[in-house]
Image (cartoon, rainbow, N blue to C red; front, side, top):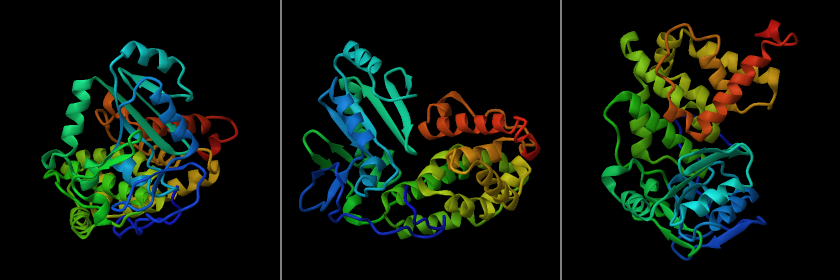
Length: 336
């Protein structure tokens, strides 16, 4: 994970595309994209696993951008074309990963803090998804259109996100809850990939979070913050979470919806983190803080099945439950 974190309202660090030493560094990309995409051992195992049942694979979006930086925590997001689903089923039974989550034809898991997602698609669905990647109307950021073929070693960057050297915002939602989730995703992607946030995105984000909201409007905004929180904590880090929760938009929403101030949420995070050390991810601790004993109002409807399918959210939710259980033990009950 990147150790040099930035404020939620600041620009990130510069893109690293030079040469670097790493045993598993692969796939030089040529003159227009100097450097290499770098994969750790788990990611290489995942690519090997996918190759046992398909020869048509694409890395997409932020997972491509992030892998120009060796220490990126962005994980792999793979689209895989499958022509023999019986073969896929057999391969899944032999998957070399612990505690992976499978639903329909997709699987996901967290390893060393990085979330990995594999979507197995029929030929028709695979072609449709690739076509949608290059549609400006259907994406939020230029890097969302990125795809990389790890077999042919070919990169497709239709909106020039790598050459831009910064995060480029293409489309923005008009409703505040959706806009906040997008702002948090953009910052997380930028931090994980080590690219600066573009001026357009940074300015838009700063305008978005600078105003407080009424209690009536708080619930959907607080819910959006909670939904985006685990991935944001994993990719951007807790310094950015603290910066974000202190903004007028999020702090006023959290106070009205969850009955806690930004200061109390940050203080509780630091207290729980000190008790457990690094036993649990930052995302898990933050979820314990915002969805644990501090919740004073009705949050039904905030968590649905689709959210539980999100790789970072699921890991954080499971671990937050373990934190809650740990505080019920005789050793820690007095500190709950």
